Image 1 (cartoon, rainbow, N blue to C red):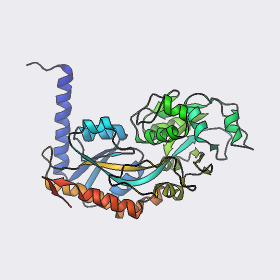
Image 2: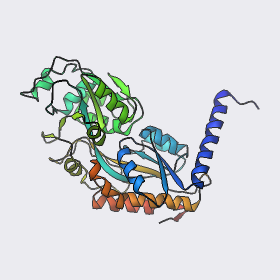
Image 3: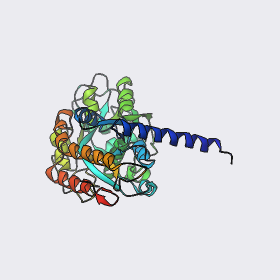
Image 4: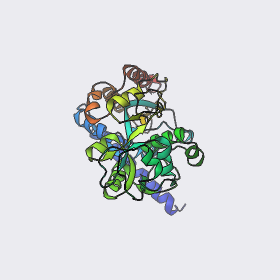
Length: 346
């Protein structure tokens, strides 16, 4: 039987992924892939974890989920829970373990403007809908009294890849702007009405920094590391909130369901920053698959257990909100539900 070109490529890719997993198993390296939102934190965490090596690919939540689906990594990470389509493509049940919560900030590059702008959710969505196109528009001027806004075109920047950061951002816009909800909705990848795409948090930050008039959205740590300006966003209580650890903590201090899948955008907390979210490590509940050993599965769970306990000390220095005590308890219970041959690992 002759193989088609596409089938040959698939076979080659599968063989390469198997070799990668085999090599990592030999050198005690755990493989992860996904969210760029959490990459600054994971980089710090994994550099300090000594029980095993961790190779994490910051390739976006969508790509990380695809890698987990293909079973080429030990864990994925996503800033959005699996949707129905993604869940259906998985060969078995996937657990969501909260790692931390963080903020998505609205970054911009407006020459001559040094004061932090105030933006409402409606106006922000209208900018991304392509309806508000100038920085000195009446809508923006109304919430920024005393700021000299230039007659400069707004250049919309968004993610080009499947992104949990995009999910958080569009989830918020869908809650605060009915037109956005009906025309675009929420998702890791949406049909953007306007703008240019950048790959990863890094790509969006780079485009915003090099483009006068640009607006984008980035994880807070990226914005701070790149010394970018970012806006105060109006929350449900009508207050313009600066993204801080305290404001992110306020948004995430809620009752978390047993499966941990919850949205915290547009928080009811008057002190909460409205574009906040948990990010989740994703693993198969049954760890005996693809020739994996129980020892490897145990190492993976030990790593994630360390992340939700000792690893939380790295959150605040990198501008993430540590998990609350209740969130840690939920995460512990979820990790304890993981099995190998149907028997609990931890």
